[in-house]
Image (cartoon, rainbow, N blue to C red):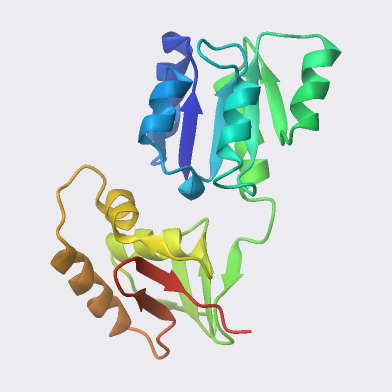
Length: 216
């Protein structure tokens, strides 16, 4: 999973980041909303974790801005408030869930998994191909296709944005993270992956990036 975390309490923020990254997730953590808005690609996160009471703008205002990029990504508000009014406001603006401080990190993990994987794990791409977004496995007529780790991450981000173009820079950041990767490396990666496929469902959108076109 790729998680966006905005929390001004750095002890809590670093604790959440460390906990989830220990199990292989990627957490982009920012201590202020302003800094987050300068850096993120919000449409490519699996979930948002947002503190409500923050400087510069509160979590509600920040989330309203995120919805301009992606209205489908679920959000969990982190709050010290216990009154019904704050909880009601969170749900009224589209929150999927909330969790009160202090909380157990395992509880937060369970809440996230319920939201991210509440639908079927296996996403149909064509009549023959499907991708398990939880196990990062590609199947052809229920037979697994052998993939490298980078090929799995590449397919993961495209499947999570199926029928939408994902720009090349975002793909490189998602697949290779902090490594400096050139466009030729990305093109070579795609070429090798396509050679394993019996159907070419990966479309190159010239000058933009890549997309998976789901066949109905």
